[in-house]
Amino acid sequence: MNGASMKSVLETLPRGLYPHHDGSALYVSNQKPVVGEKIKLRLRVHTALGKVKQVRVRFSESGEAFPTPPAKLVETKNGWNWFEVVITMHNPYMNYRWFIEMNDGSSYWLNARGLSELEMPDVEDFRMNTFSSAPDWGKKAVMYQIFPDRFAKSAHAAKHKAPSWAIPRQWGDKVIGSGPGTSEQFFGGDIYGITEHLDHLKALGVTLIYLTPVFPARSNHRYDAASFDEVDPLLGGDKALIELAEAAHKQGFKIIGDLTSNHSGSAHEWFKASYKKPGAKESEFYYFSNKNKDYDSWFGVPSLPKFNWNSQELRKRFITGPKSIVARWLKTPFRMDGWRIDVSNMTGRIREEDMYMELQILIRESMHKINPDTILLGEYTGDAAYQIQGEGWHGAMTYYNFTKPVWRWFYNPNVKGEAGFLGIGKNKINGHEMVKQHLDFAAGFPWHVRLHNMNPLDTHDIPRFKTFAMPGAQKVAAGMQFTFPGMPVIWAGDEFGLDGHNGEESRTPIPWNNERPNDRTMLVNYKAFAKIRKENSALHDGSMRFVYVSNEVVAYVRENKKQTILTVATRGTDTNASIPLDAVAGLKQAENLFGSVKLTFDGKVAKLPTEPLSINIYRLPAAI
Image (spheres, helix red, strand yellow):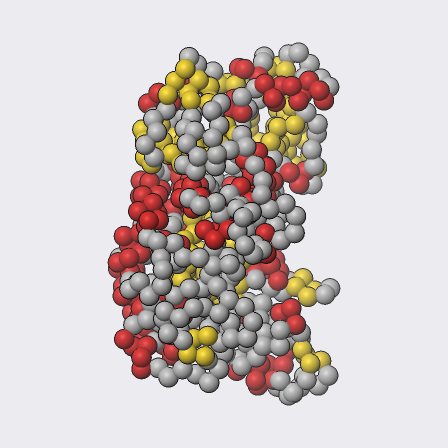
């Protein structure tokens, strides 16, 4: 089969009828395998592809690749042939791909990025490992990110005098978005204010609260910790966090904190004890030189000195000791449910030294000794897939596999100002490119990591999605958040329609009493999406299969053994949008969960919604 005929097949075969496999339970028999166990792998191939001669799996064993004997045809249903093969979990890490040989002599390879006529690099294979240890609640979570200084200000806050480093601001003042004062502007939000608004989060459908740092510092963001042993008194101190944890847990919330394992602040007690003091025990905690007068820091920022993880004493105090920082906040009375690790990709890495993998495993092990039902998420501002496999971080806070592709699909080039978050290169892309980019950056994750990745539209570090998106796109993009694999993340203020041209400007105080212009129309949508996610298990662990893709319309299904959820997201109009009835079982039984457009049928195809900037979510019977 030559390249031209391969292109013809992929162009003529509807996408919804492509062969499919992923790491979900529909296709992999055990989601938590152990070494030596036999695992059943399944592949679905539609009869429209042609007559299949054989299906095999090429898998890794101890660094070598082997093909299995031909797979067995175990079921035929709704036009799909289901093939099954058994492999042995020879190693903690395994990768594999499918080989499909047709009767006409043509053949295909299927890996995590898709279908190809040519053999592909191992790095693009499906990945399976023995490190799935994330808590069950993680894959069901709806996360809400809170920047404490900007969320809510209780009556307690009035008792706290602004510190010497701060520039006091009123709740309704405009946020300084760049230049002097960005880190010093102090709005005075506190933890008691969060507790007072738990009813808002409950109504919104939130299940997981993520707090950016709460430790004492010399900035409003508090990533320059002066201590890890107490909650900043400006936020209400330890007492406020204890009360929040008790109230939140009583209402069914989980809470995770934000920890900087890469650096401390220059005001930290360890740094102050060792700066210009070569004899101090803590001098081994940092990368000092010139008699401790000079030191390495995060991107050369003097207020953020970098930790030297060669120090066993630092490891004991921070991670491994019974009273370590990692463990202390998970214990009574705080009982935090996990950590998001700031700049996790840089932790333990400098010049020729790389302790990154070792440290993330130590952090996870320390957490699990205290409470195995906790979650560990690593921030990774670049491509995280091939470095986050689940040994340490259960999932990634990354922008590449969801946030950036969706931003680019809905990007509004008419907005003034540059969306620096997207970086250099192409800003606006079509639906085909969006799906390709998503698959390219998601392919390297094992399935259990994909389910625990954070899917934000925006965060405290980047502009608001709404500001740079086409008007009306936020509803569609939010619906995609809640229906893609991974944890949807609502950055506080998105439900109020707040704007922000950069990360600093997006840290806008929440207008509880209309202190600034806001638009609360998204509140209804977020509540609906959260309810749909809560009530439909396919959105927790179901497989992910794109069934229609064009420049303007993207449709995909999440499937498990109980149900199928079909999502149709549109940017513009595509009157040709349709899928064969065989693509998704039970299309004629589709029940609208969101959106008012009913599927219509024309012969053997279902016609998809075509209204621009719309999202429709349907529930269907189980696929198998």
